[in-house]
Length: 96
Image: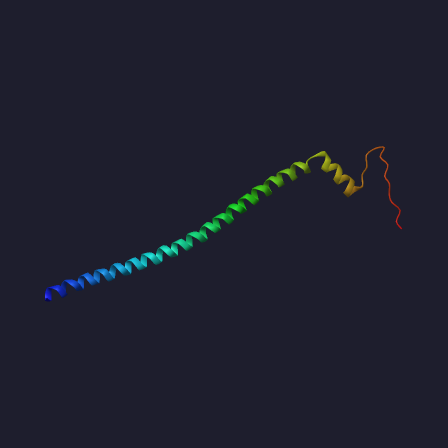
Protein backbone atom coordinates (compact mmCIF):
# COMPACT_ATOMS: atom_id res chain seq x y z
CA UNK A 1 0.00 0.00 0.00
CA UNK A 2 2.86 2.36 0.64
CA UNK A 3 4.06 2.16 -2.92
CA UNK A 4 0.70 3.29 -4.18
CA UNK A 5 0.64 6.55 -2.17
CA UNK A 6 4.20 7.26 -3.07
CA UNK A 7 3.42 6.99 -6.82
CA UNK A 8 0.27 9.17 -6.47
CA UNK A 9 2.13 12.20 -5.06
CA UNK A 10 4.39 12.71 -8.10
CA UNK A 11 1.39 12.22 -10.37
CA UNK A 12 -0.58 14.86 -8.45
CA UNK A 13 2.38 17.22 -8.56
CA UNK A 14 2.79 16.76 -12.30
CA UNK A 15 -0.96 17.28 -12.79
CA UNK A 16 -0.83 20.45 -10.69
CA UNK A 17 2.14 21.79 -12.66
CA UNK A 18 0.39 21.03 -15.96
CA UNK A 19 -2.80 22.78 -14.81
CA UNK A 20 -0.82 25.84 -13.71
CA UNK A 21 1.05 25.90 -17.03
CA UNK A 22 -2.20 25.57 -18.95
CA UNK A 23 -3.64 28.47 -16.94
CA UNK A 24 -0.61 30.65 -17.55
CA UNK A 25 -0.60 29.84 -21.25
CA UNK A 26 -4.35 30.50 -21.51
CA UNK A 27 -3.99 33.83 -19.72
CA UNK A 28 -1.09 34.84 -21.97
CA UNK A 29 -3.01 33.84 -25.10
CA UNK A 30 -6.02 35.93 -24.05
CA UNK A 31 -3.77 38.90 -23.26
CA UNK A 32 -2.05 38.60 -26.65
CA UNK A 33 -5.43 38.35 -28.37
CA UNK A 34 -6.57 41.64 -26.82
CA UNK A 35 -3.24 43.25 -27.73
CA UNK A 36 -3.62 42.00 -31.31
CA UNK A 37 -7.08 43.58 -31.57
CA UNK A 38 -5.72 46.90 -30.31
CA UNK A 39 -2.84 46.78 -32.81
CA UNK A 40 -5.19 45.90 -35.68
CA UNK A 41 -7.41 48.89 -34.81
CA UNK A 42 -4.33 51.11 -34.70
CA UNK A 43 -3.18 49.73 -38.06
CA UNK A 44 -6.57 50.51 -39.59
CA UNK A 45 -6.35 54.07 -38.25
CA UNK A 46 -2.89 54.44 -39.76
CA UNK A 47 -4.11 53.09 -43.10
CA UNK A 48 -6.95 55.61 -43.07
CA UNK A 49 -4.48 58.41 -42.24
CA UNK A 50 -2.32 57.33 -45.18
CA UNK A 51 -5.34 57.39 -47.50
CA UNK A 52 -6.31 60.86 -46.23
CA UNK A 53 -2.78 62.15 -46.79
CA UNK A 54 -2.75 60.73 -50.33
CA UNK A 55 -5.96 62.63 -51.09
CA UNK A 56 -4.51 65.78 -49.53
CA UNK A 57 -1.35 65.37 -51.64
CA UNK A 58 -3.41 65.02 -54.81
CA UNK A 59 -5.38 68.17 -53.88
CA UNK A 60 -2.14 70.07 -53.24
CA UNK A 61 -0.83 69.04 -56.65
CA UNK A 62 -4.05 70.29 -58.24
CA UNK A 63 -3.82 73.56 -56.29
CA UNK A 64 -0.21 74.02 -57.36
CA UNK A 65 -1.12 73.40 -60.98
CA UNK A 66 -4.03 75.86 -60.74
CA UNK A 67 -1.86 78.52 -59.08
CA UNK A 68 0.46 78.38 -62.10
CA UNK A 69 -2.39 78.76 -64.60
CA UNK A 70 -3.39 81.94 -66.39
CA UNK A 71 -6.89 81.74 -64.90
CA UNK A 72 -5.49 81.96 -61.36
CA UNK A 73 -3.15 84.80 -62.24
CA UNK A 74 -6.02 86.72 -63.86
CA UNK A 75 -8.27 86.12 -60.85
CA UNK A 76 -5.54 87.28 -58.49
CA UNK A 77 -4.87 90.40 -60.57
CA UNK A 78 -8.56 91.30 -60.58
CA UNK A 79 -9.19 90.64 -56.88
CA UNK A 80 -5.98 91.90 -55.29
CA UNK A 81 -4.88 94.65 -57.62
CA UNK A 82 -8.14 95.69 -59.28
CA UNK A 83 -6.70 95.27 -62.76
CA UNK A 84 -8.91 94.95 -65.83
CA UNK A 85 -8.44 93.87 -69.42
CA UNK A 86 -8.20 96.50 -72.18
CA UNK A 87 -11.62 97.74 -73.40
CA UNK A 88 -13.32 96.24 -70.35
CA UNK A 89 -15.99 98.31 -68.63
CA UNK A 90 -16.21 98.22 -64.87
CA UNK A 91 -19.55 98.77 -63.18
CA UNK A 92 -19.43 99.94 -59.60
CA UNK A 93 -22.77 99.73 -57.79
CA UNK A 94 -23.86 102.85 -55.95
CA UNK A 95 -23.92 102.60 -52.23
CA UNK A 96 -27.23 103.36 -50.57
